[in-house]
Length: 394
Image (cartoon, rainbow, N blue to C red; front, side, top):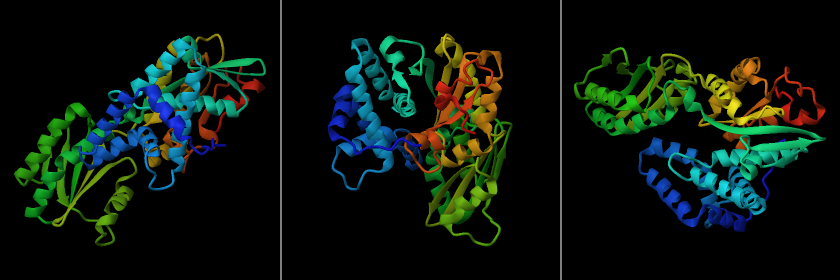
């Protein structure tokens, strides 16, 4: 059962901003407003990445519409951060504020802290008593949960789906915004509908962006229709779809059907026509494999081994199609169970996975708030007291 957000308390939102520090909060919001001028796709990606901060700020101001369920969950978790700060000792409050400031600095977000708070609330709703041992006592794990004289450690981890992508979506957004003006200008001279196909055997990351951008510009400037080397194959050709002329507004859904859910697509439209960019990497995304690598990495440093351990993983920067695909194709389960079968997983009684869909209680969220994979080889795997936290959900 999902946690239902109560009506939000505006006073708690103000207390949350004071906890972070008004100056840090103001600077962060100014930075996010500046991102709005970065280009439409990059701006949209930034709004999604920083949805928690933007939701809290919107609820602090004049309300033009009723708050959404997602915004209410953001407000609830902000209130829980404030409530926690009031019961922690001095060192614990300092650690909490440090985590909050990390989320408001640089490339950080509030997701790690809010994932921790949500995980704690989820366990309380299952009948566990919860101690924030990481904050209160500087334990390597984050939470200590107890029920019927049994205790377990929980380490809350956040990993980006970008870690498993050969073509990084953030960089793809930057590429599409960067070539937008050039493609519009090219369409003035060559009106029509075109497909710019990019085959990227080695993928695309931030370091490779300038070179690919240069090649696209040269392709357009010299009116060439293809360019290829070991790093990328570029083809610019008329856009032809089965079934006749598809309306421009339906091009991306039609191409998504043709190229598959993991292709990267962007449409640049002008009165002269449209160019759809479509990119494919040299191999499929390996988000679930990135999860397994993270599990191996964090287990020895986040769990003591003296109690059953739970690795509560949050997979960030994933969209609905990807999140549903990871679940439906049992990719997360497969990689988690491969990890649990290894000697390195001896301290781990269960692995759990969640995303923003569960954090915000969105459509397609997992029933129960998270995926769970129990380790049947762990001595505590059959403990009835721990069952609500470790019983496999699939």
